Image 1: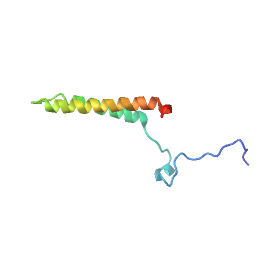
Image 2: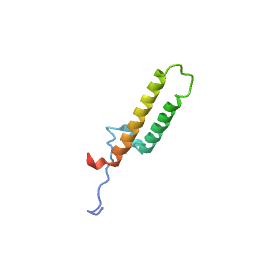
Image 3: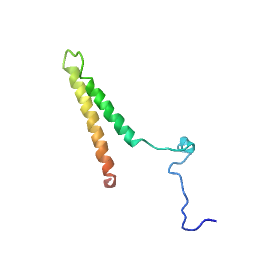
Image 4: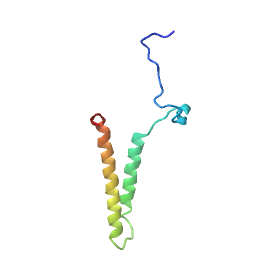
Length: 85
């Protein structure tokens, strides 16, 4: 018999909605996503090194890299202030 102060533990994810929840841990990798994002951004900027004849390729690489960095910064700011939503 359990005491009345004891709360029932419920899974955060319903196994009917997410079948993999029955296998154990079910979640995301927030730090892994940020690390992979910054590594991808650095690899995009590394593409600037090469035998480009025109500046069009460089422009696209820089724009894509800046957009990725801006998205990662926005993700960081958003994760710091979830109470403001």
